[in-house]
Length: 541
Ligand SMILES: Cc1cc2nc3c(=O)[nH]c(=O)nc-3n(C[C@H](O)[C@H](O)[C@H](O)COP(=O)(O)OP(=O)(O)OC[C@H]3O[C@@H](n4cnc5c(N)ncnc54)[C@H](O)[C@@H]3O)c2cc1C
Image (cartoon, rainbow, N blue to C red):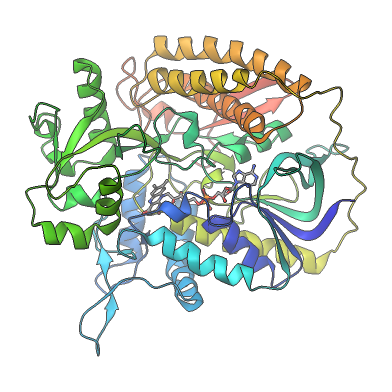
């Protein structure tokens, strides 16, 4: 029997949990998430949430900073909506019980506002260096206590459920793999929310957790939705480099507090790349580290804050201090080995100001979506805010629609496994997975070129053939579903990066090193039959 609901929410990061809570005001919600409830990028967010909060700040200033970071590709309407509605959404979080850090006398306390690169005012609400953990704690406690939300953990959405009689097809939910039984079930709903987060796992080094395999983008692309700006992938300059540490990000606030980047021989290098040295914007620092590593063949560089007072370091950066100690590095005395790592996908499923996508009844919110807020580069700490604002708006739009029309749910065919059998060659999955992540890092990473992109196109075409054939023949596992998705996302990034013949924001290619006004438009990719159509979309400009 299908699992039926008014609203199906896929994902349990800040976007999914917010959607679920808002939708629960209007109807029955089913929340599907592929790991445990809190596991998400959201829960690892360190810096905080940007929001206009202090009387010295203004909406205009936050809007201006966001537009500047976006390098000419932000959609002003999306920026205005996020910035202006942001403070109310942060107040909602506080009302739910989120504890952001306070400062001042006990009688006259206010929120402690951090400042990050690209922000001209202090406007980052935070909970020490573990903001995401605190936000997800508050949201998930409320979600678990809400009676009309049913949670399915360890369930992975495989593909969207579509009624293809119309053009475009209508989305009525998703096929979902129960990871414990390996059965695929039908989850049918009047509105489906893609809140599946980012795709950092498409690269060898990433700050993202294992769940970030771009499933939402891949599912939406297969279903025929428009996908935009996939070439703009943000690389965080400093991720811990240690064989046992999978993806631990070392917050930029360390550099804000005086940490110095050094080569393994101890030599500082940032001043050679930018007058602002360690305080240069994220993309410049990431490119500098990448260059030092490639030119000298280093495996990593060092981030050194050992010259600061140990007590200050321990209290200001408790998470970084504790985590590095677990790997035998005492940051009060030793430098931290770091590499840049894939961090944030600015592109994604095209969604309008209400989270609506090209497919009726399908909404996209959070990192999976491309709303136009970030343009070609994301301003630090704007992504949690974007997820909050658009999850709220999308849920409101879907709730309103449900009140107007509670259409009967369609009959949907059960999942057909065809002639698939159990695989005795899981090595195919691990081999292809490693290969994609490595060539994406080397050919489609921080610095690109026409030749590297051409090599990547050849590699992905071969691998896609192999993965498609394998996918048809074997029974589903979560690893196989994720491999298929990262291959699709890799293909979308390669196609978008190959299309853009300039350097802008996060897309940097040595063959076209400058921005060109003729390319000041989004890149939009769609699927037509089996073909991938890449186009420049000027509709917003
Ligand atoms: C280490 C780190 C630090 C960061 N720091 C900040 C910061 O300080 N400020 C800021 O604004 N941003 C920060 N970011 C970015 C920000 O955290 C993310 O952009 C944001 O949390 C994304 O929220 P989301 O809800 O869209 O996705 P996520 O939080 O990633 O949640 C996605 C959810 O979808 C689930 N899922 C995925 N695929 C499927 C599937 N097929 N089926 C079912 N479930 C699925 C996942 O399990 C997860 O629950 C940081 C990111 C990282 C990784």
